[in-house]
Length: 232
Image 1 (cartoon, rainbow, N blue to C red):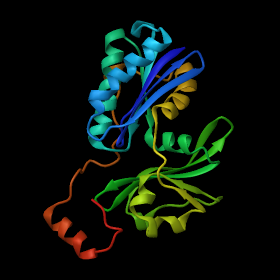
Image 2: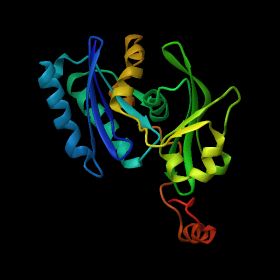
Image 3: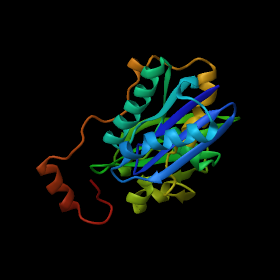
Image 4: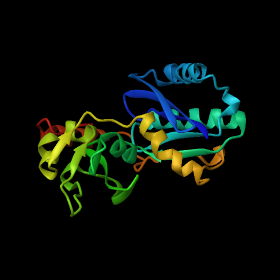
């Protein structure tokens, strides 16, 4: 099996190529240049592996949650490649990819969602896969759910954004771990092998929250709260 994976949900842009069990990947801090970087990364990986785009069996992408623009970019890239060659697409949770990149046995994945909220989920390693101990959700930092059965390792930008509120909920924090195309490919491989890909037309980001900005009143209220814990 051969497939490509895109992950553009954060400030990082990464692309991975899975080819018969081996994974090669490229990653770069992108700021706002994800669309500029992703396809050349893909072309480089395919050229180095001497694989033609038409020889790919599927496309995977980091489906979210994360940056709204970044999620749309990853989905559009996956759909574009998949439509061109009539291949299935598989979206992988960014939070699960974050847990995969962290690699601890029990991970509380948490991404800064701005607007005084975080995206979070908890995962426990179960063999080669992950068991969802707490489903993905969008909550205020003070309402971060911590399942029983720890200790839990916290990872992701949410812990960097709200350290005083969140770090007390876990045993240890690795705030700078982020979702990668490598992690997406690792998670996608067994699922694609089971035939879980869908038609490209049905691929969609998983936003978790529709709202993308605070109102003027909400921004003023945020300023009134004060302190470094307020983001958005």
